Image (cartoon, rainbow over all chains, first blue to last red; front, top):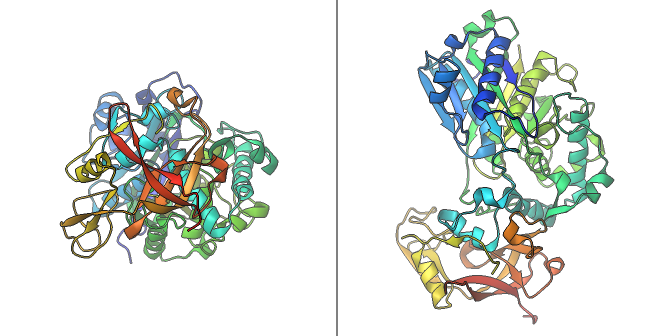
Length: 383
Length: 138
């Protein structure tokens, strides 16, 4: 049995309001989210002895010692590759707890992505001169995530016959879930026709294929098994974890096969470590920076055959009352873009029974991220 | 080439590629030991871990593997330049270069469209490879 299986549990979550303009510093947002998560778990700030951050986060450990009041840190870690982080931070926290390097670990993400540095804007990434893999991309106008990830979407269409309307089916499902969620920024239901009428951003990606841009922060508290059982809420057990890579990933697009998800590799490991298979998963929280990547992930994590993700998402099959509910909070697409960490929070909420799109008798939830570069996944189990 | 884009910054692993462009030769790195192509150019072969490399002149003929049409100008400098195509061009030895597809409208680009390399000059005199549709059937 994996040494990480059930060694740690998620015991509390915290979120700020999600908005287009927070009017606050990212540090202020981070402090609020972590304080709320600690209160939710029933642990004191001084009980937090481990911290995991995204390496892209502007809020660092030093700032949190001075302003949140962390003073008993004995273990710190950070994870890279953007959207991979949402689950990778949990993997790192669980590993530290299993190894005894820390007992109570906080994972967080804070960003003013809409009012501050916007990932969809060329100016965020452009410099006068670019080195590394970017030297072979940006001079030809491959500048933003849509320009990179659209290449994968196109290749899936070429090889598997996937259609824009199938991307639209993902958008419709995510928006429906967000319409039930008072925290969500985009709550008006849409149809496939609305999706088809939305303007092209990076053809084949339309506006309604792209996630929203948001300000906000969220945090998750994890703790060791013995402690988890003594806290006020039922824990959500970290049953399986995976973080890794199985192929060339430099420059995101310089891979062998753009129609097959990199996370096919991570999927095998998360199921092996949890000792379960996709048929036992009750709902999936999938990093959805662009709608086609829900389709890629459904294939990678074995919910359908490779190449059949497009037809799988049709007819409401990924909606809350159907075959495999996906992103019951609305995801990056419609709730908020806090870089995938809200997906872990929604998995936790499903197991606690407090989702606004609650899946009946949810026992096992998969949360996974990033299908194009190094990726990560977590399987959480109800107590 | 698009105007106002970042310029490539060569390094010791990539310099021969950029030098080739100045001579209008598309030089691609191939492992001296096992023949595997490397992209982007790098210091070691990911297949056999050899650090020896040969820079082989490409025919410059390839096919469109994937592409997007950038419809939305993500920077003010692009306002008058959209829509433009950003494609991945499949060449020899499992190497795919990023390029724009010239010589046809964006909606004429399709999978496996045959293209050939051209060299375009930037304002500072540097030359970069780009691709245009091959007009005649092979």
